[in-house]
Image (cartoon, rainbow, N blue to C red; front, side):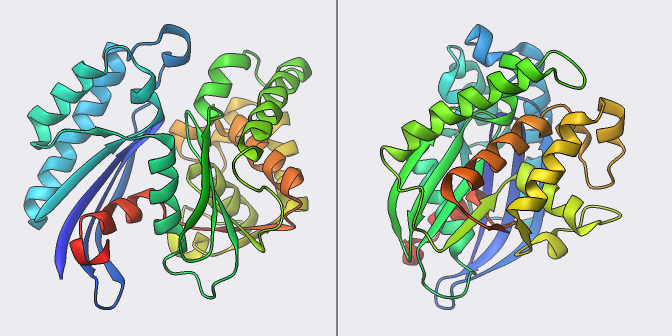
Length: 308
């Protein structure tokens, strides 16, 4: 048994998982899992740099996480940084700050590495061995991975909910032309993904990250966010389409009033929902299986030598 701490810092959020990993049984026993919206990728698509206020929000979360890791006594820590920090000219400022706070250097991983971690985390507790397409809709990018017990093909493309929102959405609710521009970017990115990853043929579509889990929470009618209820729930393509239409027609305050909606996701959920719906339409998936286990779980397992 090894106690590990995994940190995933994306474009919109930073998340921590502290868990006991048992490679003999393949069981990851969660001790603490938390998420903070820091919007590290604020303006990166436009400026190419991490904003000072975004860095400070992220460092504040890192200080909180360092205290949790110390209290729980994790033996190994890994900090993985994804889309926003890949794109930023001043990512050295980010690296130095994280190292000073947590004592580990953030690893700015490739999209393919991100996809592999997501696949490992998402499929570890799914029954059966059928072909799966795992999609991880992040703030700056979306990862596509296919495989059964291992990754067979993977591709990361730059369609994330923060990136698309900042690039195209100015109105509240969004104008038809803005939604069309978002959808055009998504379709172009799906064409790129399809060059590497077969988007049709997988028996199961597995969806990860905040956009997908929020839509699942809306479908379930939850009075508050409940990760246990959401994990392995299923949402049909028809309901994803209906929820997307409702979100695109709603004003900011109406979206904010949805019980399962995190305040930091209110302004980017429309773009995320459009990504999920387009994926389901392109793949022909009738439903999406929602997983609360994702890249964090994959990072955690990477810290256990016997687990690979």
